Length: 400
Ligand SMILES: Cc1cc2nc3c(=O)[nH]c(=O)nc-3n(C[C@H](O)[C@H](O)[C@H](O)COP(=O)(O)OP(=O)(O)OC[C@H]3O[C@@H](n4cnc5c(N)ncnc54)[C@H](O)[C@@H]3O)c2cc1C
Image (cartoon, rainbow, N blue to C red):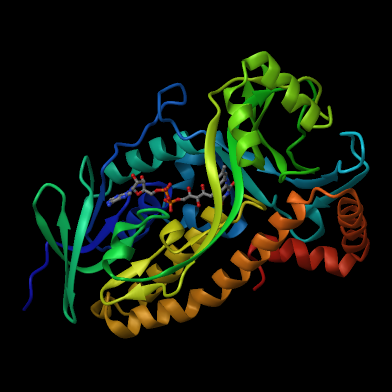
């Protein structure tokens, strides 16, 4: 009988890696999750993740099932409506506004928004309470040796861990993916996203608002009130040089620029956090598995932050892999299980990466006639009720 140090090694303790460790730990597998960086769990601390994540309905259901939602519910802001605004005319003002209301397709909101730094705090605390899960920070997974019956992961402290399955959740430059020799296809847009939080005069009313002009979308996602004022997380996508210039502006000039870019819809915007800058790419791995290895989350797919798809796709990866493991625990990490994982997820991933890439290109449009066409297109899609409902179901992941 072969002996293993753990059933599973998860490389990467970002939100996806922590969620994978929780899901497999709760299903009764022993898990070691490693990450070189300890999670930053305070919004004001250097290095805190300024993004927020909108968990769509299927993701919320998974988090509830694995016992994480109880810790999150009190901090979550529901997203009842997704508002798309085209402000692509000569002046930065709204000219087409269309509301997608979750009530059209469901008796629940589309999703629930939470700040990423808080997610890391709560996920890490949850893992502490799981008896068979160890979260080891300050350690990177460096090397991978596999054979048919096992994987050995070489950590950068010199130790080697024997496991039945390695889950690569170590981000877009995944060391485990590279060690297994899996290629990626990458699309570059010459674009960056600024992520930060603001307060504003007008209440958000649990509406997520995506404003299109040039350079990419400007999206406000509702947060709980901050210092007694309505608050939102913003993701502002722009061409790289413009994003760098915005990140370097003094706060008052930046506030003027973002208020103008928001078409004044919420009154003056006030910055209440640091501005973090993220390079925007689309990327997909050519395969989602190799011997004893499964890729999840950004190790497998990266999309521009449009329609809250990135981490929601990642949770679908994790749920699929967990379901296969639970269905046949004795086959954990074997070739048939990993082929089944690849087959189950690759179609959805390819479709979503291609769809979001196209939407991003449309949002970046600069020439006026094309911007006019975009506004007409939004209007046309919205006005046909079955098309509108199908788009909402697709966005939610309730339909493939
Ligand atoms: C601006 C912005 C807004 C977004 N908003 C949303 C949203 O609303 N909804 C949504 O679903 N998605 C959203 N996304 C996408 C989402 O944030 C990402 O999909 C998700 O955070 C990626 O998670 P990850 O765990 O794969 O990668 P990462 O967060 O990059 O985590 C990877 C981890 O692996 C660790 N690591 C690296 N190398 C190693 C190694 N050798 N060994 C061990 N560990 C290693 C790193 O330290 C890191 O902690 C957004 C993305 C951006 C850029």
